[in-house]
Image 1 (cartoon, rainbow, N blue to C red):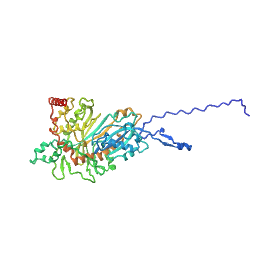
Image 2 (cartoon, rainbow, N blue to C red; image 1 turned 135 degrees about the vertical axis):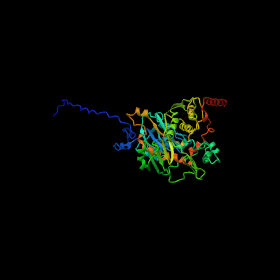
Image 3 (cartoon, rainbow, N blue to C red; image 1 turned 120 degrees about the vertical axis):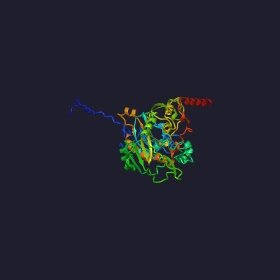
Length: 505
């Protein structure tokens, strides 16, 4: 029998073993945490805890590409068909944006890395925002709700303060200009063409396109996307750093490799781009001459090629733009006094030749912090005018002066595309906790899209419409009298006259 007065001593339980703290994990695009789960009332009624997912919004950066034909640019504009408008609708239908936030991008912190003009394409565009990206399969769901012209590559988890526009350090654009555009004897100004009529001179064969090229304002017209319903057989060769990537893509997207251009170690070639159906149009360009199916034009006799001397000269011309300058003459609606007119260009070179369906293009790459409306197209426009001896090289330095106003030619939009956006500072700051925001993981997909959609579009448009050929006929002193301005006195008089007119108005 136990004694009730005896005290029973209970020893305390042993302390739990010390646990090592969890190592810090990167916030990955596929991360799902336990706070995304909850217990339903029905499950609680049965006494069982059945966990089902409850998704949260994630701040992400989305990487994608698009072919800009048929669109009025990247930025959303009421009443216009834009890339951003289609993308927002795609996000809504993919479940990434709820009904009450539809058509209200501010509510999900929307931002874009770069704006592109009407008809301009991109292979490395980035947007950011807070979206419902779970459950897995978000990229496939989003692509299913978009046109084939727009392809989503993937997304990365980013910090809550990330902004695709503000955190983008640099942007790289590429402009493909046909080699014949740099030849002063190819598609000369209309005056030279008209003077040759009846003389049997070769310039007579440019009469048709020079007449069409007079109407510069309506040069481009309306263009629709024609590649989505066509299948292309491509023969590609490259001696560039992308050669291995192109080879790896051969089987996947129907490319077959052939030997490159041995005479030019910096060349890429894309040959035999042939739509299985459809007509290429009534006019086409061969070796730099707009030809008509009716036989009213023929090939021009020219031996021009983008050799070492031409490359050196063109790169010297483009190098005038490098550095910090006032680019008010290379945009619209921006005055010289506006601080926004001052931009910094990091590099501008044209070292590579790309051959598409027998037509050679010079690949002009420009890297800068940011660019204004039409800026790159005007930079190319003036550079081509100088290369064709329509303007002296010294005119570029005049055009970059704050106290000089001049009308600068604008190259067609079809050859321009956004190549990549860079986030160097952000990646360096958050490298220990977040994924790198870059296109490295999507290089092969981006190259495949460029080869399948953008390059064929540029080449076929030039063949069908002769866009650049027509534009070249407009590069003359009648349309652009400022191309003759080479001294400070003329420039100053021009500014004074404009100020007097402005005051009178």
